[in-house]
Amino acid sequence: MAAWHFNIFIKKKNFCNVFKLKLEKIYFQFKLFLLINQIQPLMFESVIDYFI
Image (cartoon, rainbow, N blue to C red; front, side, top):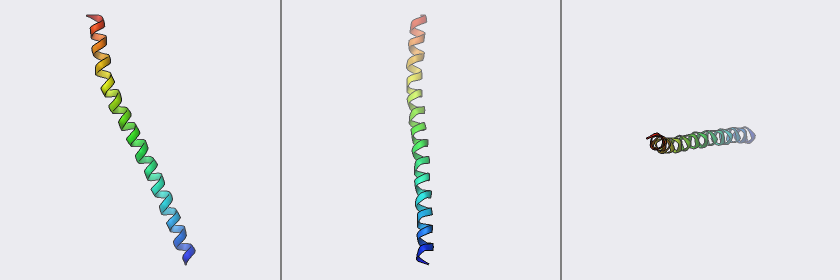
């Protein structure tokens, strides 16, 4: 019985770790997306300045 509970505990722990990794990946992509959105207008303005 104790071993059975332990197996469930390990499975839950693994699930939490996988979930955490997924969240970190999503968070990283979101930060990257924000960074690109901040850089793009600057690039766009510099390109316009270059052509004008």
